[in-house]
Figure 1 (tube, rainbow, N blue to C red):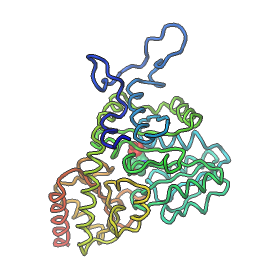
Figure 2: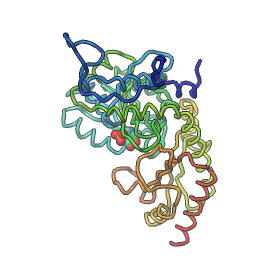
Figure 3: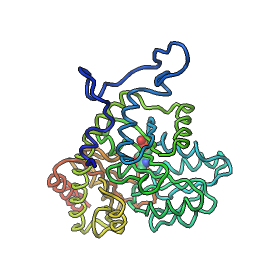
Figure 4: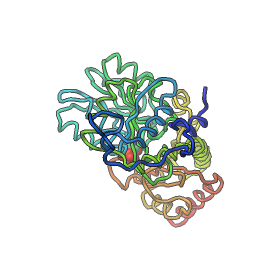
Amino acid sequence: MTGDGTRSVRAGLPEPVAFEPTLPGPVFAAHFHLPGEAAGPYTYGRDTNPTWTHLERAIVELESPDESAEAIVFASGMAAISAVLLSQARSGDTVVLPDDGYQALPLVREQLEAYGIEVRTAPTAADAQLAHLDGVKLLWIETPSNPGLDVCDVRRLARAAHDAGALVAVDNTLATPLGQRPLELGADFAVASGTKGLTGHGDLLLGYVVCRDPNLAARVRKWRKVVGAIPGPMEAWLAHRSLATLHLRADRQAANALALAEALTKRAEVTGLRYPGLPSDPSYRLASAQMRRFGCVVSFDLPDRAFAERFLEALSLVDDATSFGSVRSTAERRGRWGGDAVSEGFIRFSVGAEDAPDLIADVERALDEAGAAG
Ligand SMILES: Cc1ncc(COP(=O)(O)O)c(C=O)c1O
């Protein structure tokens, strides 16, 4: 048995080689020396790269520590999502998506429908996707959902989907593999944006797919080769370097998120507060049964758009920015993008690794100022 901390700091490291670095540096290569036959681990840079290999091993160790699996890294989370859906579904197939997931999923839906794939949608809460599995090729789950933070029962949905002959993919972006391990909960694919909490510094884009079935993995890998949605070696190396602190960041950010959520329960101007780690949250019971950490995203409603804008403007330790998972706190009025079914005053708050008392003081002051100026 290895703990999360030990696993994180050692994930994917090669066997020690005298006088070589612990984590070999990024390999920048479009092609590799290839005398004779077109065979060998490294041939052409769109197919394979040693820096990806180390990162892919690391991701497997985190997502599937007890059973062998394959990881395929991508240029972004969207590249990974598209790779699973478009490499598995064919014209005439049906897939089920959440209707409250990441806001680019409707674009994915348009693309799938343009290829003759039927798309059904249902909310994440109350396992509502269960009612739509008849004749389905692939069930797509996002839990906790972004930005509403509803949680569904992955084990239950995966069992029902498999009984119906469907494959199951779980977007594990928000939880990270230290928060939940979808393959252990029965999913066929764990998929994530590594842009967020996995790498945690808000300075790179990355995605990955992990699965245990080599045939499914081969199709995803082939898709990457065909589309060419590959991560740069520098991004892959930076991502791997960041994994060594994943447990520290995940613990600290989850503890800060809980402290902030608890503080927000006492504020009259805050309604609709959601954090799966808050014992009073509707997701708490289920989240506790399948998650090991509850993530760093807290969401809530402020009275209206103007109030939310004044709040964001008044914050000094929290950047008004999209994305989530960074060690530096960010928050945004999610309604500014359109697309999510949220109120005009809805805030998605990504809690960083600052000191909780500083963060809470900043948020409380910003709420006071936003209220006083109204
Ligand atoms: C849950 C979720 N999945 C996937 C993505 C897409 O990731 P990327 O921006 O790396 O393409 C995001 C991005 O915000 C996300 O929040």
